[in-house]
Image (cartoon, rainbow, N blue to C red):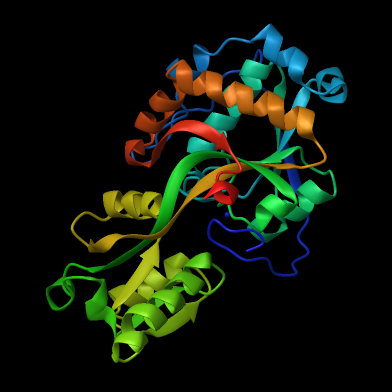
Length: 311
């Protein structure tokens, strides 16, 4: 999930924070959910063992309290979400966070809040880290350490019915795109329109901002706009739920990794989490979790620290 981005830029919202404990030691995994919402990967998580050396790398206060507090906004399937009719949270990010906590020998405490409040929760020490589809950026790296772990971007798509008139992204000049106005995708399409349409003497893209990606898809299906844009991983999930409905247009724009965000004031915690992530990559746990959620195409070869600033 700019000042937070995966998908959004922050707004001033005051919403009570809901905190729930997900015990990672001595507690069973969440119950199974329907096929479109695969359960957390018990096999992969069950294989994760505490690494005593990595545990010793944690700050003393974290070891003493025996838990990591994770900031998360569970409305972004398949990264973090609650299946319809369920109060349980599922998703790749949550499973990855569970694996990190197990490796470090602590429990995971999940603090749920609006996406645009997650970074503020870091800055005010209400959470230790954020793993919630949060994109790395040079701006964020000024105040946060960003441990990159997942590949994403902005995928333009349309309906199968409309695809015949739009074979590529440049065919969208002069047409309309509906998308969530609180996402970074809004600026991505503005930039594409200016550089690929207007600069080439073509009419600009008509950007129709709505309140959510779900609303944008509805506008597309109702024929009110010609295309929409979402992150590749969420679009793949939507396409699985509605086979034959949508078609991708071109490759993802503005590729950017998702990152684990930690305050720059907590260097010791950053070091411990980075080493734990490397271990999960090396041990194959990361790859197994990606397979569980059908996200193999978003894999990074290894986790990296503040990669945007090095580009």
